[in-house]
Image (cartoon, rainbow over all chains, first blue to last red; front, side, top):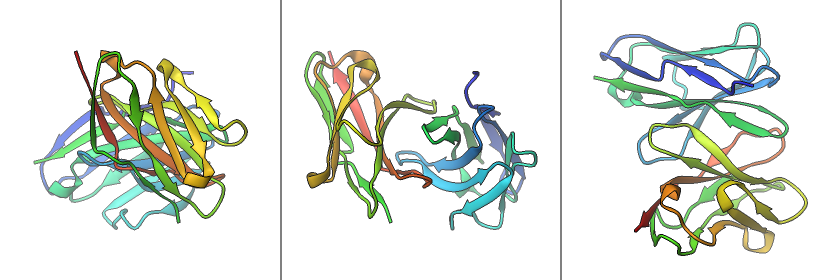
Amino acid sequence: DTGVSQDPRHKITKRGQNVTFRCDPISEHNRLYWYRQTLGQGPEFLTYFQNEAQLEKSRLLSDRFSAERPKGSFSTLEIQRTEQGDSAMYLCASSTREGYTFGSGTRLTVV
Amino acid sequence: AQSVTQLGSHVSVSEGALVLLRCNYSSSVPPYLFWYVQYPNQGLQLLLKYTTGATLVKGINGFEAEFKKSETSFHLTKPSAHMSDAAEYFCAVSSYGQNFVFGPGTRLSVLP
């Protein structure tokens, strides 16, 4: 069990560029979640997958954001036309009924 | 809808003193309650959780929390603070099949 892996750990991008993050969950976990955490705040729910199906999306997930989990294993989160307000830590978690395991996050800085 | 409040965005204690971090929740269904710790530039690490059964829950690093339904509380305690406990602590509420709702967090400082 290698835990939940996120790549990259840090990303600095210019405003207007597209970025993509990857999350590899624990292999036997069928649920995968994306959260966003801004400085000094708790994580906020973005979206979640049950296997490959995206079952819920927060209103925080604007049309510039898209998430996929094509084979029910790893997931990607893409942000198009990044804005400075997108700067945050993006956390991935996977779970079974027993609870969540979080990855270490991807810190995005939009300059 | 579920929500979490954490009283005190910043708590300071002396090394060896009692740690008490407060969490109150709102939930229309039986809640699952969690405490997570986050060190700088790290993800969240589970300290402890309550789902069903015993209301006093023991976690890692000497932390424990008690679920009090009548008070809608799930306060986190540790008898004796250690310097390594300095971090951000998040309380979260969920229920079966539901997403987590996190509180705003409490930063714990431990003074020598």
